[in-house]
Image 1 (cartoon, rainbow, N blue to C red):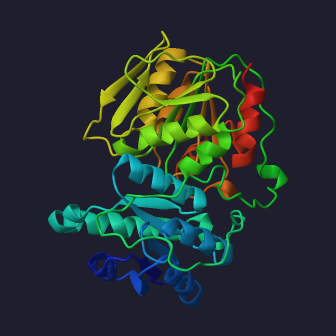
Image 2: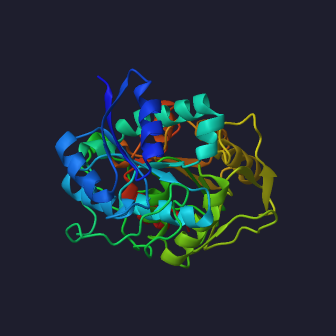
Length: 379
């Protein structure tokens, strides 16, 4: 059965182009379009699409407000279009907090110059998020929002996505309504150990998942932390700043030569690779074009295995693909600990599933358990 998509954008050109790209795939059906957030809410309820592609800046109602309403009324996976700027990153992170599943850069030049690449990427994203847990309404609604109002956002040109955004809504990540796990699937509480490093890898769904985990950690958390989130270069600095404001621990985008220390989380910069050494120093390397992911969880996990032996606690959170599996294998061979997020609390059960299927997981925990178990495990 074809994946039904609703395309939302105030630019006629962009609506037509996205619709054409998606309609060229026989397994995708564009069931409707909308020119603003209010129309998007009405169309989402009437057409019940499997996926919605959403612009941010539109007349009548912006995309973030529309996402919040949609998640309350008819939870549907939303793919946001974003500009590759610091402001665009901030807007995108607000959209993910509001309930969007994933995002793509909104780049008209790429659509003109690389139509096949854009088509492949867009269609892959649509298919992936159509299978996400969010399509089943398994997330509780975000904080209540007022009914749709009259025009409040000025009309924007097609190229000005993210030019102006509302102030971030802190702690607005939709809470997961997780069904009780079967007793056989539940992992026991972790054993305490003097870990020298906590390493967390994630992809789709990761920004909200990391926020949920890291905000549970106290400022006195005793181990250094490294974070590997699949994210564009323009986004990681804004994401680190956001986490730093929300968390009791400190969070920053990693730089070459940074020193690991307790209570500090270093986020791998987008487009590059992050490694750690036995002296507690971070090395930032150029992104290798031969690698699919920049940053790559396997690269950081592998360097941690080499440098810290059995003193690493690694966690693989929600994300598509299998990045992290081979790095986790090296960690396990060295005696370190590997946790995976459970299927019920993942947006995309890909990366954690790869860990579980390879029999590498020492424990499988729900998203809401991971933060408190990190506190319990680290001496």
